[in-house]
Image (cartoon, rainbow, N blue to C red; front, top):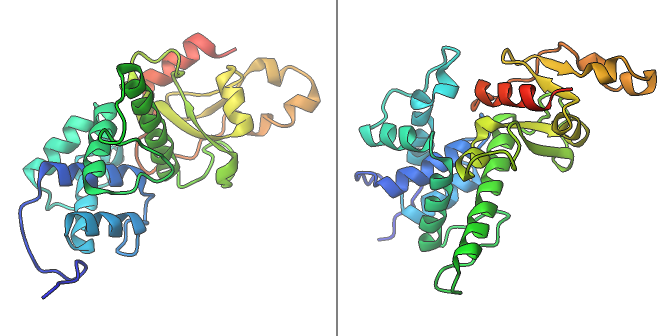
Length: 260
């Protein structure tokens, strides 16, 4: 008799690959959206034949092992496994490997890739440059999704919540980042509206290591027309993410090299 995955009572040990897929969902699902009605959780449930509730609980387990979540005294569920912790510890410092490996796992399970169109290895031969380009696209998509989730689809300076106006902005710029791991790391990012994204990129706005917004003196001492669009943000606390707080080393790098 066929058993609906939502209600299945089957208990079996989670594999490393399944935990990796759950951890990726933990990174890209906004706070409070990790429910049994979440379409991404349901899709994973169907693909790996586990109950929706078990995946929801697995996602919540990762909070206990994520320093960006627990740094303010918060805690997750206390029933995580040794392998949960190992996967979390490994990929919190190895973002590019996470997104590349989970992409390969999803290809094998025919899981959707959201807004990405991914060529499967069996469909086309990919040379090294093509594979690098594909991995870069995967990393860029993950980076944006992780920031949208962490900031709950709100600009961390202005609070604007139109997704079409939001940019996943690198603190240490893409071109300056040493490797795909830095480029993909959500702690090297801010979710900003298009204007503030450009101002940040040009060194006209930044944040301190205490997450306070700073506006460049070039704007504050400039024309009143320009000043009025920015001065209310100066010395204001940015909206803090639910996880993946901006890394202070990346902030210091940006301020020393780009702030005017």
